[in-house]
Each structure stands twice: as C-alpha cells, then as structure tokens.
Length: 244
Image 1 (cartoon, rainbow, N blue to C red):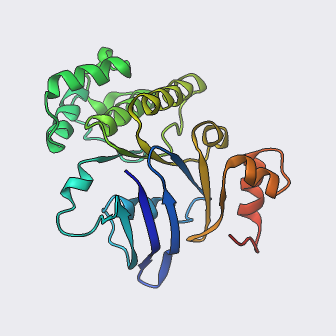
Image 2 (spheres, rainbow, N blue to C red; image 1 turned 90 degrees about the vertical axis):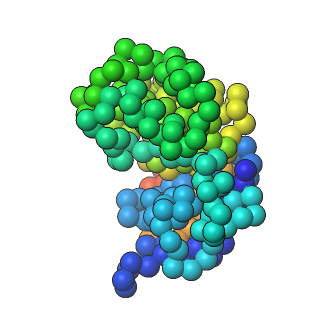
C-alpha cells in the first residue's frame, strides 16, 4: 500500500499545526518524518490514520481517501505504535493483545499472539499487568500490538524513545527483519538520527507545520554540507530561511 498526501492542513482555532504539506510514501518503502517538537509530525500522523480530520487537503491510501465512508477496510490494514500512548494499564499483556486482535478481526488470534510473543520475547511477562512493566517491556508490547493484524502500513512514532542501547538495537533489528520478511510500508517519526539513517529510504524535514526539505539521508547531508544527518537536522531546525 502507498500513501499520497495532498495539500494537507490542520488548524486548531487560530493555530496552524500543519500547513499544506505534500508527499508520497511509496509501497514497501520507509519514510522518515523528522522535525523539532511541535513541528506537526504527530498531527500529520493522526490525519494519515484517520484519527484527526484535516482542515483541508486529503490523505489517499492506495488511491482511497482515508476519511471517506467505507474506510474500515483501509484502517484494518494499518497500525500504529508510540511509547507516548499507553495501553490499558490494569489489563495484562495477553489481555491487551487479545482485545486489540479482536478489534482488528485477527483470525486464529491465539496463534498470532503466540507468534508475536515469541518474536518480541514477551513470554516472561504475558500475564503481568501492562502498568507494571518497564519502559523497554512496554515498548515491545506496543510494537506487538501494532503488528497484531499484520498491517500493510505501519506508523511508528519514536519507537525506541527512552530505551537503553541494547533494547533500542533489539527493536531496530526487529523492525528491519520484519519489514524484509513481510514487505510492509513504514512511516517513522524519530529524533534518533542514527536510527533514521539505518531504517529510512527517504526523509522529510518539517518545521513549523511545513515541509522544509526532503530526500535521502546522504543527499541531505551533502546538500547542507554536513558530516551527519544529526548535524543536518540541527542546521535546518535552527535556520530561519530554509526552503523545500
């Protein structure tokens, strides 16, 4: 599945969170959505997921508007993971996965939970309440929830935030391996530039609700005369006159 974002904007009262952005995420590719806090990344993801209604513009997934009637078929093929959105704390890991699996209409759910738990090493705490887990465990459960329906498009909002280097590397390895095996399309929002360089085919740089630059990591680094994507990000974020 591919995503085509056309003139997408979102206003909250008089505040413009996203201002007429345009981009395409091609099938089976990984696109990095970058920018400082408050630049409109999360709002953009919310509109792509159909959770936030755009003020103007549209999101087309495989040519179909995600906000139109009958969008359930599209949404069933998508999923989302973020460490900032917690799963119900009083439910066990197993209960959470079962509930979300049922919401997505997953067939043979018991085997799917077993499979994803094996892959992400969840078995030791499947019967533990989600609110009692460590940050690393919660992130892995969130990732498991996002893959429970075997989505064709996966949205990841800072999937390794606050993780120690070992667990962060485990999650990145898993995402790479899962994508290679299942040919999925991924949109990744992250502040970890090494992670972006490792996982993304292309990136979009956002600032104050607008796209200010785009390209491969290598192209952007060369264009801005920097040695790394992190230095490139800092230059763009601190500049007052960058133009896409």
